[in-house]
Length: 258
Image 1 (cartoon, rainbow, N blue to C red):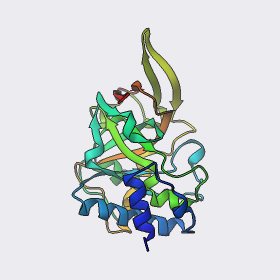
Image 2 (cartoon, rainbow, N blue to C red):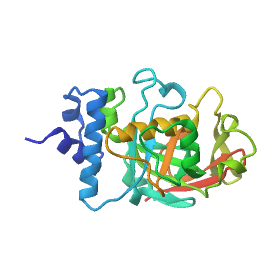
Image 3 (tube, rainbow, N blue to C red):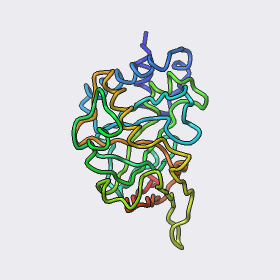
């Protein structure tokens, strides 16, 4: 009989599979996190490499959705990390969307006992980015399964990193503008400010590092970490960009029709 991990693995290989077998299982958020790390191990055993992490439930209406202060983690596969300008085939993504996120590059190891100050010191830079989210579970799925499913992550796209000290103001003043390229120029989809929308980024990185430490992991040099959604738009063929203020810059990606 297939295990819960087997069913989850099948869903990640074929995201258009029927997820009803998963929905028959009741698992807690902590059990979901443990199962997610087992999913990561299966990817690694198949020859994939770990490229980085995400921290969930840090922005907008998703904050505290799983409980006050609950911020689950997710992993990012190295083969699904792209540079700005990447072309990603829409056809293979099933359903979901892209969203602008700030992407941090880890400069030194950060784990147990991490603080806001040590998290800031451990980062080599930060970059404009996209998260590519693949919706494999139906809306309203329970928290434990959402975490086990890796918080919908499929991959990320990131631009050129800059050091924090070069920013023109504090990250709490960041404004991110999501656009789509049209025949007449960039058309704004959504513009979102950090203020009132986003958990403080270095707090989030410290929380992530402490959470990973509880499962035997850490933020390691060279890894990339995405920290929460700004503007978002469903999958459709097109060229999308994110403009990040404070001197962080621009990131672009294309979802191709094939």
